[in-house]
Length: 335
Ligand SMILES: Nc1nc2c(ncn2[C@@H]2O[C@H](COP(=O)(O)OP(=O)(O)O)[C@@H](O)[C@H]2O)c(=O)[nH]1
Ligand SMILES: [Mg+2]
Image 1 (cartoon, protein in one colour):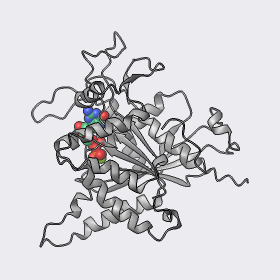
Image 2 (spheres, rainbow, N blue to C red):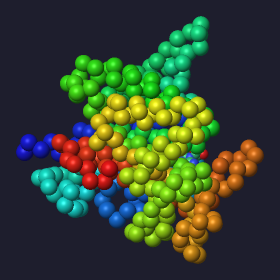
Image 3 (cartoon, helix red, strand yellow):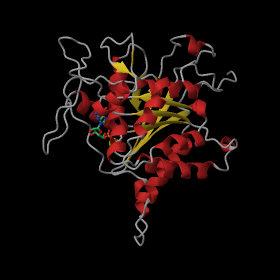
Image 4 (cartoon, helix red, strand yellow):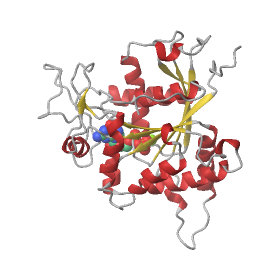
């Protein structure tokens, strides 16, 4: 063995974190679809039978049923393993000694109905909710044990409800408290790498904000010609979207992230799990007809119109995977 800590087993863990309804479950299902469409070896497998069941069920809902996965009704924890290629696909990996076995990264998600941390605001006089405390502790344990975090920020929810800060602030404060004595917190910053995912990019309110601010770019490798927001511009879009927060608290999300995490360990991604609609005849993005959600019928489930084309769903995971397995972080060219 060399001194390189490249893990052969999932010694690294990524935790999914986001307000209820921010799109965690859908992102996971989309991740499976997006990985399967890629021509490389990255794949995701359940680490136990329940997590495999979950993945299969949510992915089928999205790809075959054209519906969003159902919200969880009980507290559930799931673990998956992201397995990379055995051989380094490009130079980025070959700077290090080649791993004897493919990189493996654990992904864990605690899915709970209604969110865990909004419950932290107990009404005066109400009895402490032992169950909720337990759940919060589990979510925290998961964050303490992870060095990678996927943080989902849902701009639509922020616009309508405005509780992203609520769902960030309490766990972040408690996470810092739990890590206070740790060597990893000596420099005053949490050791985690955090992929901030702005979700629901396919929603016209998000896409049009990006367009108005001239933050869209094309990806020449994309056969559909989807507009994108690069990671360099994603922070700007995030800031822009915070302006329309219902509570006016969203600006604190960015500040809190910068205070608690190393700037070079935060990366922004503008994502969509379902992507844009693509007409099967033209097979390309059409500014006049891009919505992949069907108009909502009273009492009906929201339905997806065409094929799902996940955008920037694999990228945050691979970025985290790369950073977590790279040992000492290198200068990041694409921040
Ligand atoms: N437009 C759009 N809506 C989405 C997307 N992903 C999720 N949603 C919506 O957000 C809802 C909640 O998503 P879900 O994955 O269950 O969130 P979770 O509570 O964080 O697991 C879904 O039922 C959809 O209505 C997306 O990529 N685009
Ligand atoms: Mg969910």
